[in-house]
Image (tube, rainbow, N blue to C red):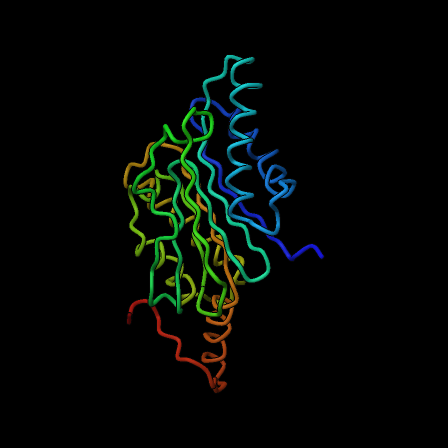
Length: 231
């Protein structure tokens, strides 16, 4: 039986769009069609990344005399197991337990742009975690953001939107938070590609619903919602 799967990716191209476009169109196919998938997702991701890069290098980059490269940061959810994989210089951070914990999932401490797709020596980093009710959301972001906006600032921006919402939907608030993160990076003179993706989980929705239960005067018999400003 094929498991329940979700795939989300952030691609950050440099030197042209060909490599980034190739990954957008094909990388997920390399993963799900890999013989190790879904039994061994980490092996499937690693070999898929390597095969995709080899194909691009030998059949597209060389033939087309193309010099583009691209980071690839993916989030793959298989049932209750979450895999975050990176090749390049993008980053993934998580808000846990209603913002009381901020965690680097992919920190890029050892990576640089020369480890990206389109380069001979790619470096692949994979983190696995078990999904539970403590995970609020994950932010995928390019280096132009995390070089200008700290992890905690990004997390706080999202929770500030939740805390100060005024009848907006959770989807709308999430979009506003992403816009605010990117605008903050621009205000601080970020001068490269700026991309940001926010993936919310059940805990974020619970916090959002809890706020409106408090506003409407209903009691709530669950863990206390602590606004970011009080953490």
